[in-house]
Picture (cartoon, helix red, strand yellow):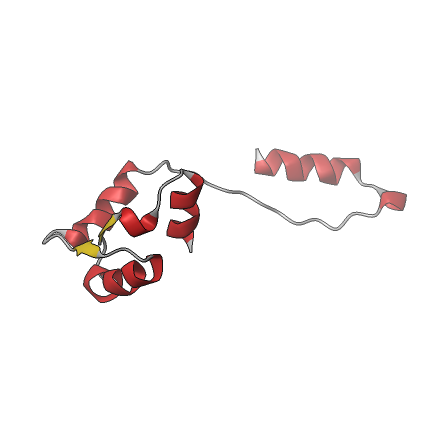
Length: 89
């Protein structure tokens, strides 16, 4: 589904694309994915297992922080809210 959305958003027709399998399970899943997309060609390189590691190295690293605090508007604790925001920062 993600491949369909990405290709269609960029104006690409997956039926005209060559699917390149990457990751440890590429040989198991690439053909099924290509069939779903309507693609007629699949390439699974000998180094396909290393492609997911390469993708991880090239991707932008992000971190998400969250903390849940229950607060009543009738008894708002400004110090607690500020402490929570400071912890997140």
